[in-house]
Figure (cartoon, one colour):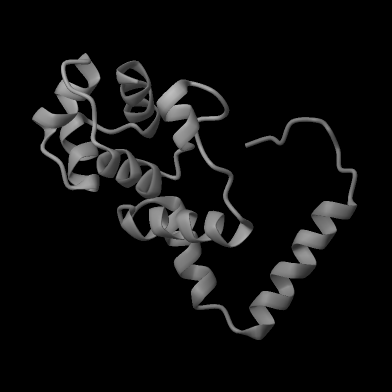
Length: 129
């Protein structure tokens, strides 16, 4: 299991400290788990699986996929959480902030643009800058 814990943490892009903070453990505990010196308790495993949507069977045995699939609503919620935590200069955050401020006419215009793009096979040549 210790190899999978490290694999998971790296897949999430977290340091041992950040990983531990998100599940209420010290980075020293994470280090001992990853080295194989100690095994996480059942409660720690549950916390890891719940917090990061990890497939418990994968974590314990290596069988199956690393993550539990999200519903569309959960996927949207997670994406919005990342956007909220982004820096103000991040394009995604600026884009979604602009969307929040749009009126009905703006939404209709955006919908028309998306439909036009979707229905137009387009020119496959590169766009000049």
